[in-house]
Length: 273
Image 1 (cartoon, rainbow, N blue to C red):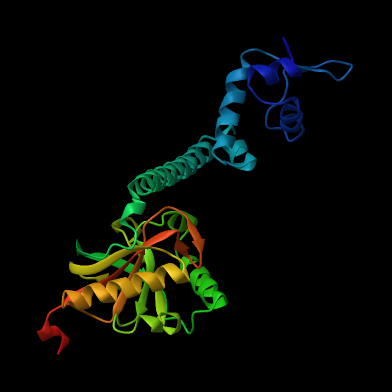
Image 2: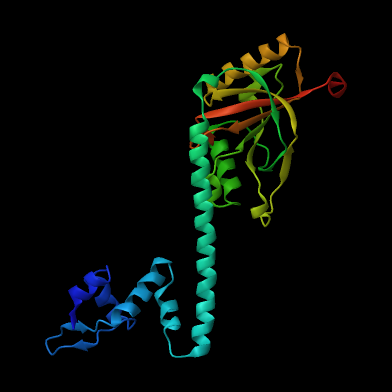
């Protein structure tokens, strides 16, 4: 037979765990000597590994007791519930994998040589969840709005910074008004999250006057002024909505990543009038 330390080593667990499982009657030794020493059969290993496997999936000890009970109806019901939890865990892990893959791709796609180089970019349609409109641009207001917004989603959504950012009410003719302009927080919605009941806003497909900037006050101001000059020189008119889209993988300040795109949709003279 196996001593408790030997069984623990064989199952890659701890002596303390086996003592605890014995005390709560979930996994008991085959024998206890007169001196109080616990001994286990080799065949008990497989039951112990099953228990440890369920625990690794965050299945509670009470649920494990039901799974291992002698009642067929109770066991079947609990196993079905456990299967649902495992399926949910698999879905969550796949989402985490997708988030990590996206963050790797974003990180590899940043080219600092593109910073502060105005251009006309063709963008496809994107649909975003949006927050309420801000009252002001203080750090306190941004943090409050950010917390309120992402509480309606989940922690994995805030990890995925791709296609998140802000929609700011600002005319490119008045870049100095940026610090006083009201805004909304944005996060691209997906077909996988159709149960989320939040307002949606669409960023239309089309041509956008765009510039990649550092997401600091100085960086955004420099980018806006360069974009204004670019549009004036090329006689390009834009609407009065600034799309600020995060372009890399970590939110560092005021809900923004280190780098981001500033974009205004270009419009014709007919639209402007």
